[in-house]
Length: 293
Image (cartoon, rainbow, N blue to C red; front, side, top):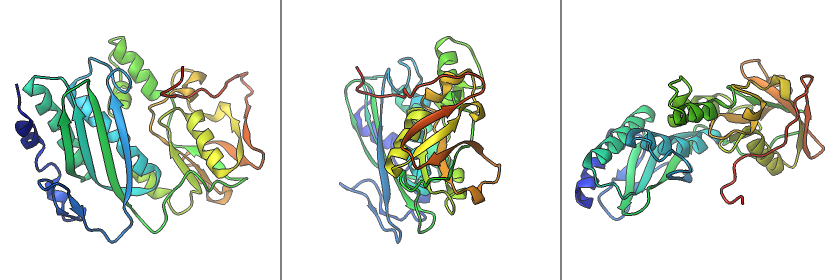
């Protein structure tokens, strides 16, 4: 059985080659790491629990990548550059190879986004991954959920329901291109950066497009008219309530819209969300809630 100190050595120095550019002046090894940055530090935390955020038979590579990626998505939604992350792993796994695979994928995503692992913890118990991410604004502005204005267009960048299709295929042992959309979502950093100058509000679609759109509109004290027929779907209209896509849903003033994204509706003065469809679609807002009975 692997020891705690052997575990620490597996993860030691992940992202260390990016310490300087990420402002890490005291790396892991002391009781705390220290970052020295000239810009505001943006941070968020996400937990991933076995049987909830990934299947019980998921492999360590995919669990690690997915757990870190979905935490990073919050930074992308705010138009921020990722800098570093902390990682806490609770597990009853005794097989050393499991931890080696987990650390391999952790290093993979750290290299992909040039981020530094600056701390963490290992404990024994039911599998649970906690990730804290740290970032800085690309510019002086950050994207927030509040800020949408009546008349703004509501946009997304990709099909909804891809991750839900991937999970379904994974569970049914049906190999498909959608499985990576679920197991290895890609935080939309380039998208967040590209819309930073003109987007008025933004949120990542982790709990379902409609549920997250509703959160953004509530924060902005506005409503919307959604054109259901204009939403790109993977399997069916229920995709608009499927979570785990980790796309960005954002609003832009009409004069900034340039057809490079899917326009799915318009912000209104009147609160609440109304739906239009010539195809007879009839939907309600469901979304994912952890404590829903």
